[in-house]
Amino acid sequence: MSSYRDQIVTLSLALCASVAAFAQEKKAESVAVQTPITPPAVFTWGGDARVRYEAYDSAQTLNADAPFHIRDYYRFRTRTWANYVPFQNTVLNVRLAAEPRYWYDNSTVAGEGKEWKYAIIDNLYAKWSTPSSANVPVSVTIGRQDIQLGDQWLVGDGTPLDGSWTNYFDAVRATIEIKDIKTKLEVIALNQQAHPKDHLPILGRQNAYTLMEQDEEGAILYATNKSIKDTQIDGYFIYKKDQKVTSSGNNGEAYTAGARVAGTISPKWQYTAEAAYQWGCRDLQVRYPTTQTRSRHIDASAAIAKLTYQFKDKLNNQITFLTEYISGDDVNSTGTDEMFDVLWGRYPRVGETWAVAYSAETGSRNAQYQNLSRIGATWTISPIKDGSIATSYFAMLAPESVPTRATSSSLFSRDGHFRANMLQVVAKQKFSKLISGLLFVEASFLGDYYTHHDMITFVRAEVMFSF
Image (cartoon, rainbow, N blue to C red; front, side):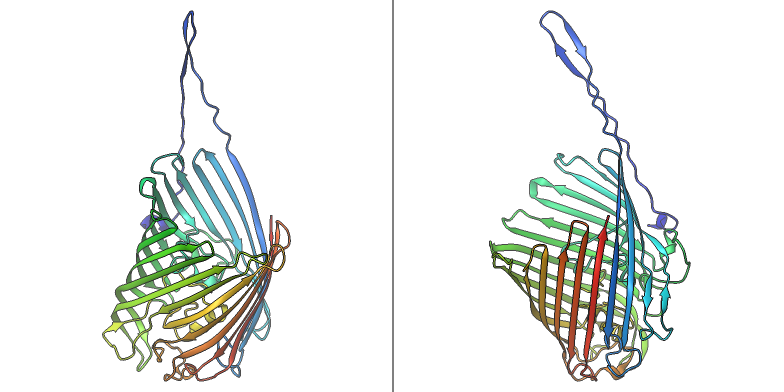
């Protein structure tokens, strides 16, 4: 992956073919040569603009009386993309994204004002594929690309520090389909740099934003098999190496092996279940019982399961039961680190309040879910055309009562296991082919795991325009 230091390699293949057809007449034999018409190059482009208002209360401070416990701001994300097909089975893609923000004066010590961030190339790749009719279709994608695997539990966002502005990976990805055994193989090598300008130039301000806390190298082997009727079985092996860049970054190597199964029990019942084990070695700062930096072997695990019932009625009623476990560091075990790393699964899948609240116990690492057990359900209904409302409740717990990475130990009781009761309502509406909206409300009532038993909240209102 060393070539990634200066540029993303652009792959282009030229396919040329000449086909001869022979025709025979009754009285004389002649040869007719037919040359297929080469399809013209295809160029398409488009984009989107998203206006989003977000407000947190006490999610970062875990204390409703702390200064600047409210954070509210606008996010204006614009993206434009271009897709070029110069030859059959070859695609070149580029996408630019920018997201300036406007902060209100109660959100930050710096006060109210605009935050003019740079624009970034968040997609730039070349993809080559064999014809889909091939017995073993193969595709290769080289460059900056979005990658999501399975339920995006461990692989979904390669740039966690910028929120949903970008989520790219700088990677080489090969996909192989073996039709005879109904199996697809993914082989991925990636190299992520904390500073976005290290691989590709950025446009505009050259300020020192980072997209993750460390430089990362990784390899992923992911296999999917559908040979059993109504069942999909996935197996994977993931290697990740971290090299610390910011004060909250990690050093170390982690190996993760896991499996996922998804299927249909009946026309109305579906399920998924996934489990992973993680080992390796990690250098990090442990702040309890004493602050020290040391290297420890990793011995961690995680699991998640979902069961969905679809009523198949006029309102598209659906209920999903979910349970999840992510191991935490045992304060009584000094020789090993039991904290599971969710790898590239750091985005607000657990909850918007929790993506922020976790930073207080993980060395300022947003959405670094760990030491977590939760159980609950989501009810979804579609009362109007192209609209839906999803209502969720989760009981949130901590398997280990002591957060060993906590940046502020006074925020944690260190003798409780109940994190919170979490309530969430998400309303979505598609107004037209090009315009959609979203309203997101979340509240978590803190329990005895924390010192302050306050309510932490999050609100989002959003409109998306596509063109």
